[in-house]
Length: 88
Image (cartoon, rainbow, N blue to C red; front, side, top):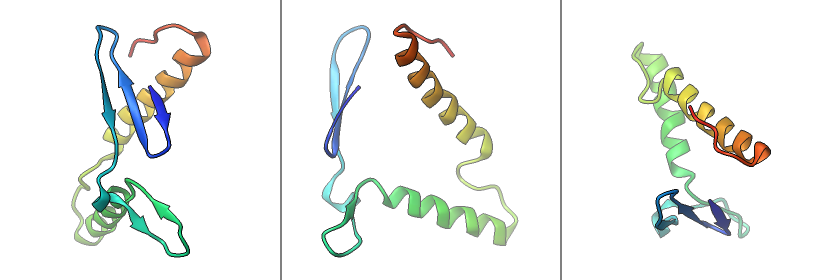
């Protein structure tokens, strides 16, 4: 993966790559020229979490989902540190 400013390029072991970049409606303007990208999803997720607490329901993103994501991020860092593939 290569991150350049607001975009990233994801390469695949079997070839090919794709570019990921936010669309203009995914930016949040915090004023004074400060912008955050891909931040709206976090806002929606936090709102859903508090709504789930109020209603006593399971949130859209559970702790199990978050753990899977954390494991993936850890594997990326570990792969970089070891300079070899890490399998989950």
